[in-house]
Amino acid sequence: MTGEQACVAQTLAEKLIARAAGRVSVTPGEVVTCRVDLAMMHDSGGPRRVKPLLESLGASIWDPARVVVVSDHFSPAGDDESAAILDITRSWVATAGVENFHDGEGICHVVLPERGYLRPGQFVVGGDSHSPTGGAFGCYMFGVGATDMAAILATGETWLQVPETLRIDCNGRFAPGVVAKDLILYLIATLGLGGAAYRAVEFTGTAISSLAMAERMTLCNMTAELGAQTGLIAPDEVTAAYLRTVGVKGVEPGQWYSDPQAPVSGHLRVNVSALEPQVAAPHSPANAVAISELFKVSVDRCYIGACTGAKLVDLQVAADVVRGRRIAESTRFLVAPASAQVAAEAEADGTLAALVGAGADILPTGCGACAGYGGNLLQPGEVCLSSTARNFQGRMGAMDADIYLASPGTVAASAITGRITDPRSFIVGGGG
Amino acid sequence: MSGRAWMFGDDVDTDALAPGAYMKGPLSGLASHCLESLDPIFAEAVRPGDIVVAGRNFGAGSSREQAVEVLQVLGVAAVLSRSFAGIFYRNAFNLGLPAIICPQTVGISTGDRLLLETEAGIVTNETTGGTLAMEPVPPHLAQIVRDGGLMAHLKAQRSRDATRGSHEH
Picture 1 (cartoon, rainbow over the protein chains, first blue to last red):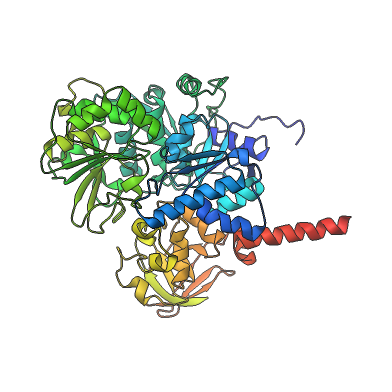
Picture 2 (picture 1 turned 30 degrees about the vertical axis):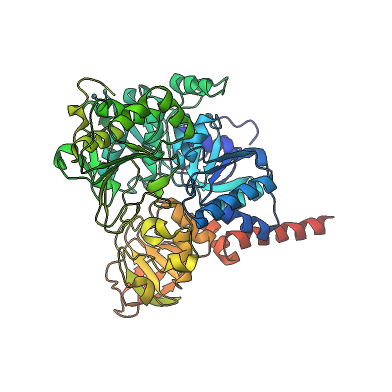
């Protein structure tokens, strides 16, 4: 391969995979072996499952400094079984020499960038399906199960079938009250659940370059619902600026991008200016429609939480909607910040006070009701409007509960009225 | 392999396969709730060797491997689907459950006896007499299945490497 020039036009996904595979270029469809720069796992799919697998192999971790463990699914423990899982996680990281351990500090997909683990160019695996979140930072990140994770921990590498790229070009300006969550719900409804069919989804266009990192993370996060292998956004000045704030220095914007001539398997164009707030009806994110179609459905519970709906900007938008108002008596309003850091920042800037003042209950950080593992689960027959990523039947508790998905602003506006409500009626030209 | 078919639709998700509320308990308990939101009798009535047949995007959602393990606990021998969600597809082979892509599943009904000839790439519906084509299992995954799953594959690879190493010295 010596002397070979990278004369083949390649997409961002192909360039990132080629780097990890030690190749000049890769072609969609081929199976390559990639070196892993970082492996992240959580308490559910992590130590409790990989420990016995590693023991059966007689293997130890290839490089503990490249492993991050985050306890978020069963944290805080609401019962003995959850407490036992958290204990297994703690004792395993101590024995295995994993120093990058975050215990109850927030949801893995939010903790990872907050602590400066992610940077452009990396090849990262996560033991969770929403791992494409990391693609917002221009690293190639995707989800794997526990057996794949055990093999990666033992060898430091994994196989990957190179995906084709689906380019989603987003232009125009988001209207006030319309956010990234609305765009990704619209795209899932347009393309269908699994509609990306293992492709790498790359978001481009002026509407993307104007988005803050938290919003970009929401877009990439829910490419999981599109069935994408990963979601990506080429790192730019916004990325570099964010990374500087978390202590990652020397990131050159513009180093990682898709060559303009690189072949893609699909190219979708979206004008976000025309986008309305979206709500996904039970039991699929692909059931998203413009809010006017579901207007006035009564809701028993409004939930703001999860990696895709409870970052600082999400809580701020919700606070702007409810500030000085009071939630409907028929509705419970629950807010679970996506990380301890988000909670601290929301406390410091008055966001939490505004939410509590309106009648919100603030819950501990963690995956909480979104994963359906912990406390505060939906009761039989309840209707919930949620800022989370999935509304599959039974996911957040009772099998006959109805879950609707929407942006945090829509959830907050609906908490005030007790019915699914357009947040734009509360944000007059505010722009969120 | 041959077994009775259980039909499901598109987008069978991992919350249906392995409901979150039972994820912290033992696998047998989780398995007893497998697919109950789609077919309340499935977990009780499925028999070893039976084959799950579904539409597109089977296994959508979570990376939880329990979505594969519960099918194995219940004795499901293979899943035949028009397409699979990416993580579920890897998990299935890693744990030794054949996930077979069958672009067309027309003519199969719950209870039909299916004969799967993976080498030949043919599904025969022994109840109706019809045949359908299945896509071949990719070579790198076929090797994992032959070795009995990813962990067994890694052990086999290590012992093959060790043998080769000792011959060289």
